[in-house]
Length: 137
Image (cartoon, rainbow, N blue to C red; front, side, top):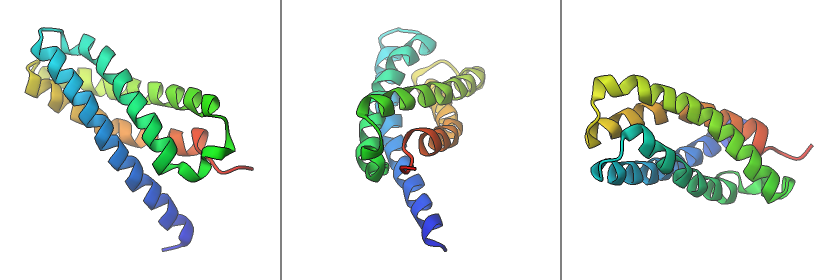
């Protein structure tokens, strides 16, 4: 495997680990809110931003740490939010489509979240790597 492919694979694996942390934060907040009687769809409006902040910090420092000096924190944060919002749209669409099949219970909501997160992972990685955390030109 070439060094460039090995590097990209390492970034993808770290991105996946950070995504798992983000998923856990998202799922915990979602589960708590659904348990409290908040609808699963409205709960995602709170759980997603919470997970986004956690993953921004981890990806900036760990996954793509070597690129953090190539742009300002504000520019990377803005780009990351834009990319993640696009990925969230994909994630949320899959989540909403899966809910009728998984059910609106806590477990069903988290299973639907897993489907959405799995699809969103690839969209978010591509956008983060190509648009937000990229080598200096």
